[in-house]
Length: 107
Image (cartoon, rainbow, N blue to C red):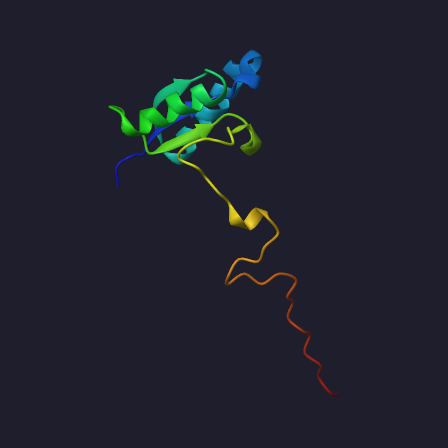
């Protein structure tokens, strides 16, 4: 399987620390076997739009590596990413709080 192409996006609030965050992202990509095809350090929704455009444009990146936290992503971003397991809802096939009952052996 060929390496996946990745775009690194560092949100605007980390601009002062961007070189460190880019280094962390590049190291992450290397561990995962991703080929870095672009780095976006613009802020806000415009930066996210630039990063996603690299997925659909000439670079054809398959992965966006965010040098920040999930809450740094613009709420109105497209394409959207939604994680249903974070709302405290039970995911089908996942058992919460279930433990195997100890076996009692008569002596």
